[in-house]
Image 1 (cartoon, rainbow, N blue to C red):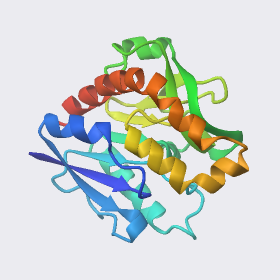
Image 2: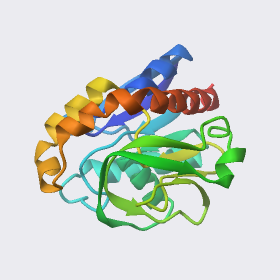
Image 3: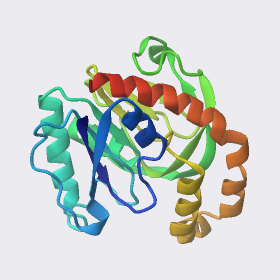
Image 4: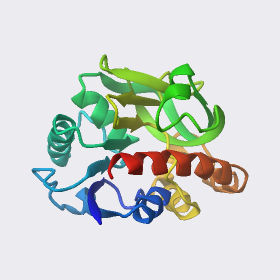
Length: 233
């Protein structure tokens, strides 16, 4: 089985659905739990690709979270070796930063279930062409990024101009979450309860909406992750 490096930056946010899909394609995720102090690999080595997951920290918080610099170095190496990269939420922000884009606080946090619109470029994209043009995505971010000059924007939401982009043929940044499962949602609501209160949101409502939106989101996510997996083979 081909190995994937997976940087997991907070306990609740693991590979979820993506991990199931990757393993079904013969890919073996090797988790690096940066939140537990595990060291980010210095080199891609024989790994077929790199996945960088979400987390509550900001790209610019290097002093507080030293692993961020190591994560960016590994992303840069994967790009130079033309190995597939997938950045989710924080991972997409790190990928954008490596590509020279600005990552800043958004006007307000985007948390919970909100529609995502794929743009015209997504219709011709290798990973997104067969996805629905519009669906309800799951969001949990406060920072946003510019589209890197070398990249193509693929999706947006009413609040956030760029929800997804592609650089080259195999580096994707996705700000929203398609990897989630019911368990991940429940764990995030519990772990980030203080943030929910600060934003005057209702965690129970976020969990309750899962029954309405998760199936369709995972159907689109499965298409995306299957297509990304083929890039690693």
